[in-house]
Length: 349
Ligand SMILES: [Zn+2]
Ligand SMILES: [Zn+2]
Image (cartoon, rainbow, N blue to C red):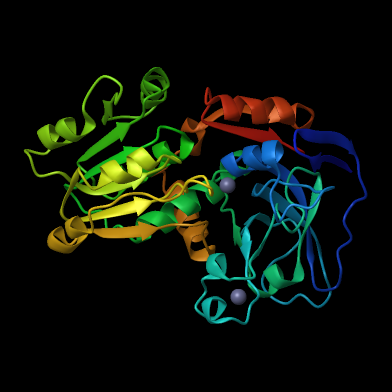
């Protein structure tokens, strides 16, 4: 099969590779599409501790079941179109028992520890099979659009904590694909004002034109705190999401937070520079809640499927370009440049 083999930082080769074997406890899928994630870009340039070369990365996948191991029970059948769930837990710790596979201390992810989707075929490994780690694509979601289920599921996992209500003002730092997914999802939950902040303002404006009713702030020209206060009659935002790896955004979020507001640190900070300064009395006196978010679980994928299937979220708006597997390194560079929203790799028709 053709596969993009990650050989180490800045080295991906497209080559013929041994097709994975489907053991009696596994499922083999033919990969149709796999979108490029920001973490794929980081892995490509800097490596990743769980990606041991030679490796196949890619975890925003749609595929078709072509083989089912004989011990595999359950409803899945050949020809089913699925998106596999990325986070696979150990299956027996306290967190796995609660379905929080994304937080399992021994989590092993597809496209990191296990071979991922930048190849014509991949297996759903045994622990994933026993966790039913996939969702079915309904008829009205194309294999291309389905490649956005995974990133949307991560956004959903974050917003599960945020209780976005009708009439809320939501501020999002970061105008990348994830920032825009947060914006659209917040609108679908009834947010009245969705405000996006990004110093790459030309890009923010260009992407925002694809969506409706977003308020944009250019923090290099305007004072974000003052602007948000002005837009909310001095009250501040109900929900703030930092969808960027920026300390400044995390610290500033407390200055625009209204009493009883919810903050999500969706984006992580560089691991050698992740300490921020915080007036904890703001949390105390104003009952501000601060949440983290990391990856997602099957129920979030199912919500993503439902939101796409019902037309509340249109993946095509987020897909800037579909490229071939041969072009993957170009695609990774495009994502890195920030000039695109999502790039999806077409693996097989
Ligand atoms: Zn991803
Ligand atoms: Zn576990």
